[in-house]
Image (spheres, rainbow, N blue to C red):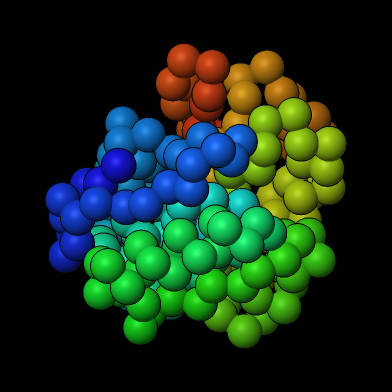
Length: 183
C-alpha cells in the first residue's frame, strides 16, 4: 500500500498483519480525495478507526492539517506512527489511542472545528447509528459546510439520517458523504 498523491506520493505504508482491518483501497482513496478536492487544503481533518492511517496520511500528503487519527488497537497506533515518520508528515498529525465514541469530542475540540471527518468503523459495528447521529445530525465538532464520510458495508444501513449528498459503491463497500449545514 502506498500514498497515492501529494508530497508523500509513492511512499509505502505499513499495515499491521494478522489483524482484522481492511485498509481503504487506492481506488477508494483516489475517489475520496477527488471528491474532496481543494476543500481539505490547510483544513482540520479527522480519521476515525484509523487502522494503518492511510486516509489521514493521504490527507496530510495533499495539504490537510492538522490531521487527528483515533485508533483503539495499539499495533495499529504503532503502524500509524511509523507511517507518519516514514512519510515525514508527523509534524501535522496527532495520533490518539482509544475508543472513538469516548474520545471524539475531546479530539474535535482540540483540533477542530473539523472540515472533514472520515469514519471507517468495523463492518457490522453495532454503534454506527450513535456515531452517525453525533456527526451527521448534531454536526458535533464539525465546521460549517464540513463533510462527514463513512466507509461502510453496503448492506449496513445508516437509518435515521437524511440521504447522503453523494454515495460511491466499491464492491461490498460504499463511501457515503454527508454535508454539514452552512452557518
